[in-house]
Length: 87
Image 1 (spheres, helix red, strand yellow):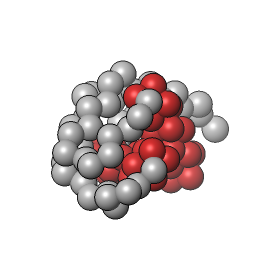
Image 2 (cartoon, rainbow, N blue to C red):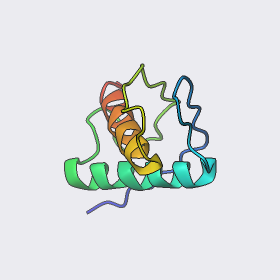
Image 3 (cartoon, rainbow, N blue to C red):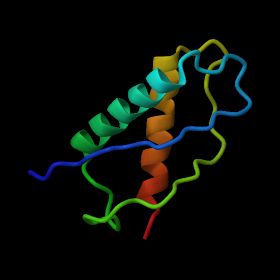
């Protein structure tokens, strides 16, 4: 099994009622959730062993009082869908 490394350089969150209180923790939570998705579902076709380009995630919906962990999980799923479209 290949090792997959995740490094999210920057996360910009706009338009949420309760933005993450600790951006570094939020980034780490998002990386962990994405790492888990990749381990469970595999690397999307089209990425191969290359580095993923900058990924812009389209608008997404999160509950008004979502915790940082819930927002990170939703963002990780949106990132996975976005990188699945990279060719």
